[in-house]
Length: 132
Image: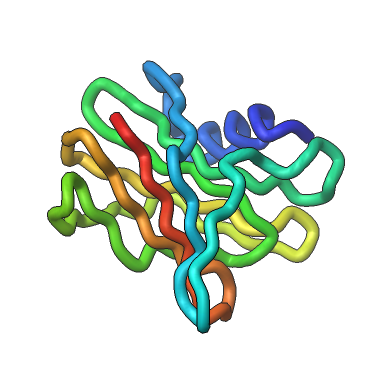
């Protein structure tokens, strides 16, 4: 299954319509432990198992974060232009066969969205930065 197909299935499961545009993060960083490291902004190659992606779906009235990973996912912090914002989690799923899926919504607008994600039981977290 391609990343686009997985996102479409996940959007349908969360009862979301078609977004105006879809953005990839301009920055992905793993934080915690002894070091922080940048992660390539791409997705894992097709056929490499469970889809891994992070996309921001831009709608007229809201922003929706769609994330796929092999581990369970949760948002631990979200900021718009440096100010903490609330997050509405629309869908959280995880299975050994299909991996983790997370969809959450933000009703705040700005220029820079920063989201910190917890992946599984890791003490580290992943920071995603989107420019709107």
